[in-house]
Length: 131
Image 1 (cartoon, rainbow, N blue to C red):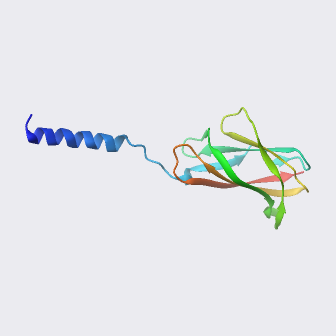
Image 2: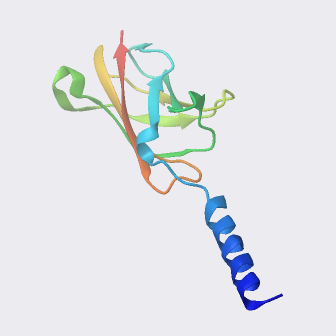
Image 3: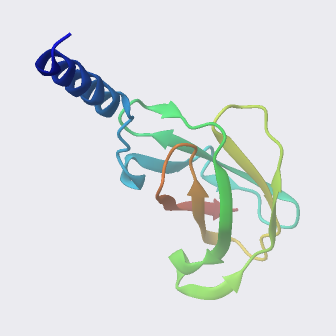
């Protein structure tokens, strides 16, 4: 093999490696949706969000949700917050929580998440109506 052919083969191999590295689209291609907008007012209420990959419309499994906040900012009462805790769920891409809503009205569930294979943090806000 000549040096010229060797250089071509090495260049082709390098290009193949570069093309095989997955491209990440960024956190903007994900969205959180409520599974059900209306939730029960009071202690022990259940709420759930679905994390969707927008280009495919498929749910995202295995995300780690953190820095969650549940407040009444939709009703201009940002300082009114509700305690909440994660719950197990069997549905792929659905993340469930138990919350103690202290009054009826609009509640914003603010979420940050790490998605497997995504370098950026995914953020979102889902609005629920406690009735």
